[in-house]
Amino acid sequence: MLFPTFEYALFFLVSLLLAWGCLRWHAAHKLLLLALSYVFYGFWDWRFVPLLFGISLWGWIATRGIQHGARPRLWLLLGVLGCLGVLGYYKYSAFFLESLIDLAALNGLILPLEIDSPLLPLGISFMTFHAISLMMDALRGKLDEPVPLGDALLYVAFFPQLIAGPILRASTFLPQLRQAPDPARIDTSRALLLIVGGLFKKVVIANTLSTLLVDDVFANPAAMTASQVLLGIYGYAAQIYCDFSGYTDIAIGCALLLGYRFPDNFNAPYTAASPQEFWRRWHISLSNWLRDYLYISLGGSRAGHWRTSLNLLLTMLLGGLWHGAAWNFVVWGGWHGLMLMVHREWDGFWRTRGGAWRESVWWRWCARLLLFHAVCLGWVFFRCADFASALAVLERLWRGVWTMDLPTGPLLCVLAGIGLQYVPSRWMLRLQLAGVRMQPVLRGAAFAGLLVLIEVLGPSEPAPFIYFQF
Image 1: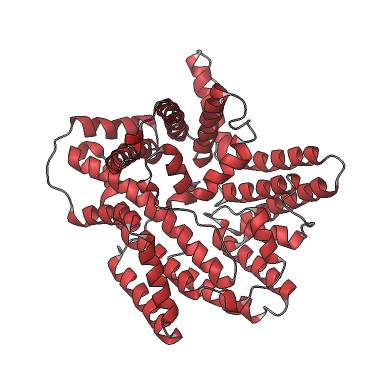
Image 2 (image 1 turned 30 degrees about the vertical axis):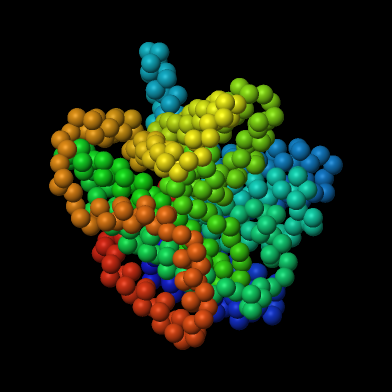
């Protein structure tokens, strides 16, 4: 069930009415949200609902052992290994078997193995991350009360974030389940603005770029001019941002209407002037998860200069592998890890020698442009299915013909997708305040009118959500 569809709109409207209708019975309210979340997931494939329940239950059992058992670290190890084992089977078993066969072939050994990749359940990475967060927060003492089974199940399965995030921390979401949401504290104006803005980014910008530019460029770069290939690379940078940030904006808005607060997941990432800043702005919940549960666990910056650089590289390599079971994702993660390492050396070098010029406006814009193009280079490997395809795109960019014959619609969408990130935040706050001052009837009419406008502006063929494959 996709967010920008009539089916989801109907499902969410019914869910909203039922959830607020039984608010006075708090236990029933949470049980209803859990049931609705399973219905939401089962709409894709009911066969995987037991998997969702099983990961959630296993995470809760390990958490209870951590909170009340004699050997909490053993419970954590068992819990994490169980979750990663399931994730590894569905997401990485075929990848590692294929790599083993290729490695054996390089040494002249032919392995008679037939690889049948299992169907990848939607959102399995997000389920796993939530279950691990539950266990880690319990071990670190961030959960001050025993976690009820129902709350643990709802934390992992809550439908607004289930398929594509943002990744919630158990220590921030579970306290919200202890008491019923307060209708008087619901920021309806912000929620509707997030939903409309998310739909515009996803339906109008991301879908248009996908159907009219990006898919064609990456499918057959040899048929394109160098200018079209470059626009296609920029288009994918704008597409993946608008696709993912738009989807999570809708998720945050829907959760807010239900009375629950999610963290922001994007903050104008293409305005960043350094790799560190980029990852503080891009997929913030994942960046923080990797930092707190992986980078720090590896030793962080406490184990010396070179060990810190190695920890950065390992974290990004594993972050790349998390996105997909293919070597191109490993290259993408390694590229970002290398950028983090190099910039850390660069920053340390100039920090000891002054370099006040690095604080100037002109240098920040130079740094933005350099970083944006470095990120776009990484997106080529992220988007392509293999090395050969990525090299074909880059070769055409290098050897192709440069012209000014560019499609107007996709060009405007690229400019909009990137330019939106430079809109001052105070403008969005003013829109939100204007919505607050509106009468409820006018607010609803404006919301409905914007939905119709988005439907008219968007392409007739919807593009799939990019992060469903992860």
